[in-house]
Image (tube, rainbow, N blue to C red):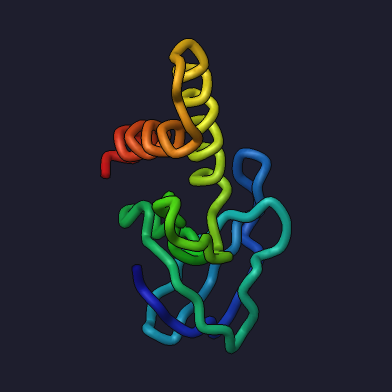
Amino acid sequence: METSQVKQVEQNGLWNGMNKFKVSLSNGKALTFFAKGEFSGKVGDTINYEVTNEQYGNAKLLRGEPQSFAPAEKKYEAKSIDTQTSIIRQTCIKAAAEFNAQRTGVGVQDIITDAQILFNWVTNL
């Protein structure tokens, strides 16, 4: 993850149905970001980003750390979670529930534990 301040944003065409934006940063880099609408950073904003393709100078904005499953005895905290992680978590909990539906004496904690195992495997943790 890299952090820098936005110096300039200019639209730079379309690619695959997405808007391309050439963004100049205070660290001297000029990177291309893709967005469905407008680029969400404005001049003067400090952004976190990751370069996704060095050759073409493509990057993506980072918006917070993914949330992992918490043990049952801890309270869940409201955290920023990206869409992809949310989809993976939902899929894992559904698969764990379906798997455990055939077993007797299974509680919610067993399903959550199995979902965490599946999530870790899918995300290579």
